[in-house]
Amino acid sequence: MTYVVTESCIRCKYTDCVDVCPVDCFREGPNFLVIDPDECIDCTLCVAECPVEAIFAEDDVPDDQKPFTSLNAELAKLWKPIIERKPAPPDADEWKSVKDKRDLLER
Image (cartoon, rainbow, N blue to C red; front, side, top):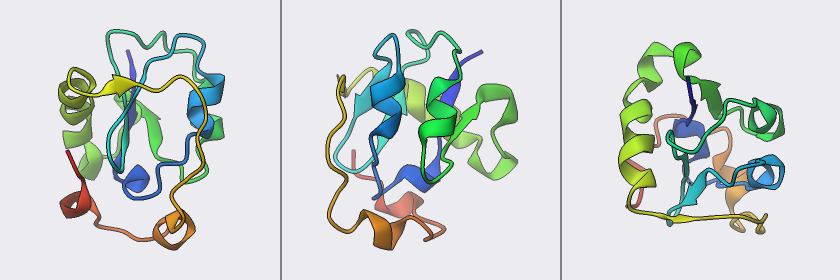
């Protein structure tokens, strides 16, 4: 089983999760993070660190967020690893409670 970053991360892209990942499985896109399922060791450390509760165990991903499982796998092959925490985007706090952000995902 792997962990999956879901829609809540879009436009927030807090990187608290990156700091605690022991295997550097996060990949960074323009306004979203994903987890590389081939690298994730299921340690669960990232889940508690995400301030927008965007990370779920693959088996626990909410039904409306299931497409993010394959999206994480797809984008992890394209995006570069992020191995240290970075400042969140300046408007991240404005976006953290916004729902329905899928159309805003930048690839």
